[in-house]
Length: 106
Image 1 (cartoon, one colour):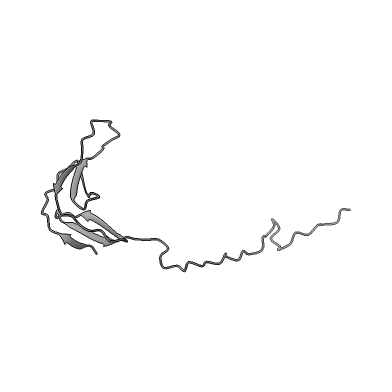
Image 2 (tube, one colour):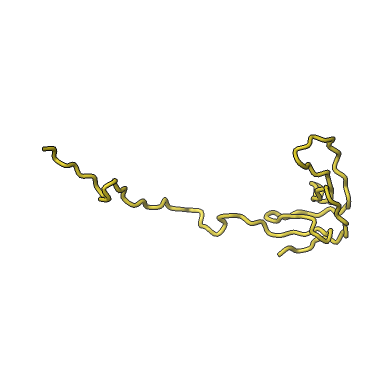
């Protein structure tokens, strides 16, 4: 569940990517569509907020146009750091027995 940090009330327009820049302000830039190499414009600062970021959180502009944060999903965070290698089952041969046996030639 996301927590709202700042209410900006930005109305989002199609074709623009809204994000928090390195200063903690809301900016937008033209979205690249279909691999077109059009003219790149400079990012536009939409709202000056100055959000201080915390480690382990993802910051974004939600559907209401407000700045929100949520905890990042980190795969493997519940596992212990010292992992033991898994034990392997003995290798089986084509005949299905554990060890390969040689038949005596006649």
